[in-house]
Amino acid sequence: MLSGTCAFCGNQTHFTARSARIGPLVEPDSGESRAYFSKFALEVAGTCDACHRFNSALGVSAYLQRSLTEGTYLTGADMVREAEAMTISEWSPPLMARVDVEFMPPGVAAYFAEAHDANSVNAYRAVLLLVRSVVEATAKDLEITSGSLVQKINQLAEDGHIRKGTREMAHALRILGNDMAHGDIDAVPTAEDASDALRIARFVLDDVYVADAVRQDMLARREGR
Image (cartoon, rainbow, N blue to C red):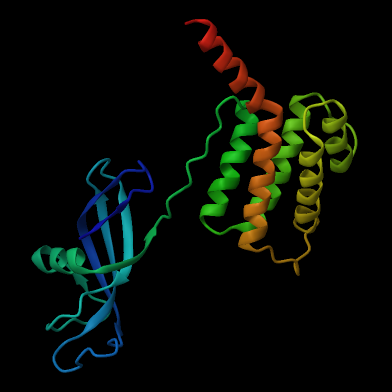
């Protein structure tokens, strides 16, 4: 069944096939007969049944007895049959991670959300650069505008905005992103680097904006009862 999570509305839904393109012939798996049966790489463009935006499914067609030609486009009943029976390996565009930015200033939140978007498409250099910008923007929002990034991180801690442990992690982030910020073409960040950077940024933002806001919100609600 042509189902997945829409990259635009975030719903887990069915997609209506609109076009299908046949890719190269795929070798049968062990135990599958080669006689008269075949399967192909398949790309299907379909509209989300919830929001009607286009998403593309990439994968492999079902192992069926029929004749298909690489590079051709399917329409009508043939398209629907192949789309509904295919095995999907990935969707395009990829689903962008939904990130909680409640209680954060809009400018800081925008950097943080964009860093998560970059991570969704495996743009790890961009993640590190954007997360460094999260820390810079947070410091600026608190009127800490002078000095290097390391000095700003230390000032955040000295002023009581972040905890000692968060400061140590923020310095690790500074080290992670330093090569990216200075255009070191040999530095290739990994998925783990990007994940760590996002986690560190979350700690900084929770310390500065979220923890106290949540506490105050909870106490206000409890006192109102």
